[in-house]
Image (cartoon, rainbow, N blue to C red; front, side, top):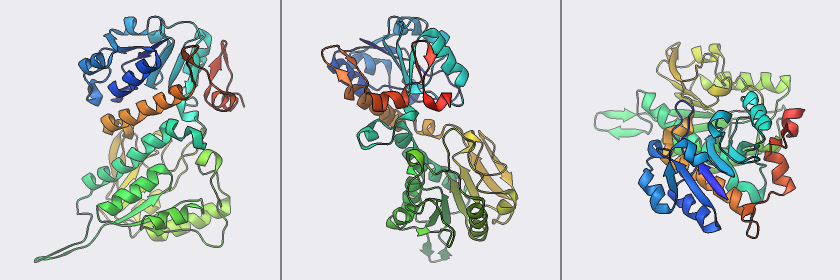
Length: 373
């Protein structure tokens, strides 16, 4: 069983799908691991570290030749893995909705593509969940990015020259990223408030010491939406939420938006008129900018200014903390493969619950229901 770890080709992608730690663990299972030269450099991992862990380090052609499993952060182009064995597994974040043509190419080439972002949010798969591990650090980084762009301090400071007021931070969307953003903004000393369409998150917000801002008298989602995400709300709820947010956002210095709906454009949470109501010098960080954005006027890959407000739209935020996010991502992949490792076969064998959820292609066809519906 040969596992190939490739250098990421996507622009701006600094993460890597395996670390020396997980290389050792894969070898301990009986696998052979090959790493493309330079694969870990942008995540602060030298080729020598992989070699010391027991991996072979070579060019891409030699790395992928005869591979049974190809690991990636983002899905590799089919042409770049042409030397892999027939039926090889492609295990990565494959962006199935945004890169459907590539998924079709995997099927045509006879590869079995496994999309790690489709991992079901069930108890036994928590340690395999790349969305949670990467979102956690994205929420943290979003607050640091906001602090970098904000022209004032976050905490209240009492000095001989006078008092500096604490920044007011508002987190919109309280999933993994949102909860970490709340915790980080609180650590930095901001006065933090947060909102979500899921009523069940109110207790989580308050447990972190933030103020919960929720629509009253109009029903939201009592529990989690599909897979732990929010779902589309009624027009009545959207109108009530917009009114509530408009009144609250005008008082905020920092706003961080994190709302996503899988397979659909990100919901619009902040309008141009709401931006205009904010104080000049305020900062908005849109973590959903690559899926269309929660904020009107946000531009992927840019920091723009509208009505005196900075709107931060960094692409691939997890990659901005590549060393730590790579460590977590690579553990997710190892936890996944090792959980299904059959010692007698010397290879992983998926069960139906997780296999059917994440398998995109098999036997030359696209087989995932989420892509066929």
